[in-house]
Length: 218
Image 1 (cartoon, rainbow, N blue to C red):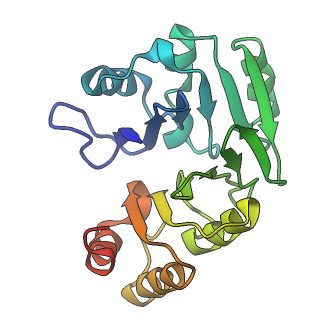
Image 2: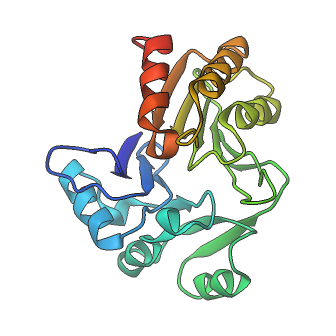
């Protein structure tokens, strides 16, 4: 995974704004598009990701800081398949269908996207959000913001592929959580067998520090 857009510094030459986007080169899949297309494209160039190589875009949820760069990507590369949440505006979904190769609308039910990639399905009511599940030797779940709770998302991901999730990545939505809540989240994840963690975006500085202490080199 290459992080392309984050409110934490992606690389020395990259620009940071609030939002998140990551690229999975093996699958030619872009997860979310940050809040600003111009900055996303600049960062992609600086970390060596060619917009023309992207074949799939997975949108976790409808917040501006995860879909803001979508227009900029599809303007340069309309030959992509989008996996979008059903909670996205129906008008936007209809417009996107005229602009790209294909649009697959994902609802509450988990489903296989292709190969060893799955969606958890939309989780939560206030801000429905889907997360990406990667069924490899190190089963992984990748979140955009993790509004439903990273521990709850991980439980669902484990049910989707019938395997323990060993790695969690992305925004864990702990920015406004106190230390007790954060430590309990870490405890639950470890109890479920999670070995590796890559918290970023809306996880928050305190939570990232506590994850670093508890997962050490992992």
